[in-house]
Amino acid sequence: MPRTIWITKRFDQCRQGTAYAATVLDPPPPDPGVPHLVVRGLRKTYGAPPVRALRGADLTVRAGEFVALMGPSGSGKSTLLHLVAGLDRADEGTVALAGVRTEELSSTRLARLRRRHVGLVFQFFHLIEHLSALENVALAALIAGARPAEATARARDLLDTLGLLDRAAERPGALSGGQRQRVAIARALANRPTLLLADEPTGALDSAGAAEVLDLFHRLHATGQTILMVTHSREVASGAQRIVRMRDGCVIDGGADGADDSGAERAEPVTAPSGPVWVDALTGRRTRIRRADPGDTAVVGSGP
Ligand code: ADP
Ligand code: MG
Image 1 (cartoon, rainbow, N blue to C red):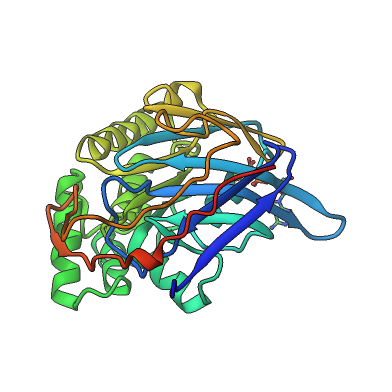
Image 2: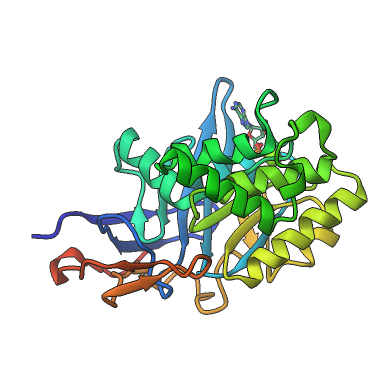
């Protein structure tokens, strides 16, 4: 018997009349052929009076893609990122992260999935001011489950890779904006995330700091890191592989990846990892994959 079958029928303002089905797998490792992120029909309304922040947003990000998400202020970009990161729950719609459907997970399992798969970078860094750069990054590795010695070694490696080892003992207050954001990016990479999410990561930086950070994103992308970055800046977005645009809570342009731009009639299976071993593109780490049972998969077609 399949563990989980998901069937949704929806009729929304963004793209009308689609039904989707997907597979739910026990976690990890993402197969390179599985989209790292599949968002379908995502809706979120806040408070009273109600603010409809998302009105049926769709987005696919494939392994190794660098996607820029643009749109006017208030169009729902941050809300979308929060829901993708599992920091909040959608009212309707689905998020599959590395092939794992999130909406029916318990809070504990969702937190575990987030720790395993998501790295988050914010506009205002959110570093812990009384910890050094090294401690900020090592703390994230500890939270992700590393032992203390491993966490410190990982933090040191990351700061080295990001050109910040000589600043490792400094507290955030002693660093430039660009350096602080690079520490925040190192922290976001501490768990070797499948998906790096960044919300206006250059928004609080001067042009030199922004260039530093952007250069780093390009280097990470070149190593195979999958990145979804919100930005207001056309210049920043032009460095990404693909630009996705939002307006009024909908993805209006570029939300499907190049291989799947078809729209309504396609059911979107999120398939099982197929090989026995998965190799992490960024770290080269090899992980044995449990082969999915054919009964785990259910594709139920599409319709209005
Ligand atoms: P963007 O990041 O594109 O500027 P947001 O996702 O932050 O847009 O916000 C989308 C809409 O939802 C806005 O109208 C915003 O005011 C509203 N909103 C966002 N977060 C909340 C919240 N926690 N409570 C109430 N309204 C919110
Ligand atoms: Mg925002």
